[in-house]
Length: 122
Image (cartoon, rainbow, N blue to C red; front, top):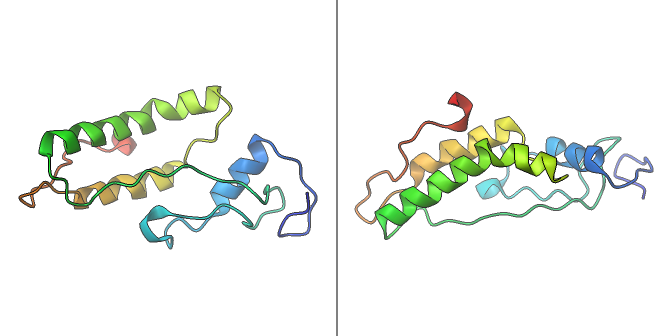
């Protein structure tokens, strides 16, 4: 398939990784960066991703804490598992941006729900 840069590419992990790496995650609202039609000579033009949406204000503090612990584990252990299963893990700089945003997640009383170390420190 012909990509945005005019190159003919085949689908595969390297082409998907190129799409993920070339997305403008910092400018993406709520980290929703469409991966289709990204630049890059090796980029597959119709790459997609799965996103999880969470409320910034959580009604149940323990649920919020456990949810964020799960996502933290997912980034630490899940990246290796994703790679083994032929999925493309999120780039480390994007994971750091996402985890930084967790500081904005509060409980019903406005208290931070996430106080664990980020994956960058693991």
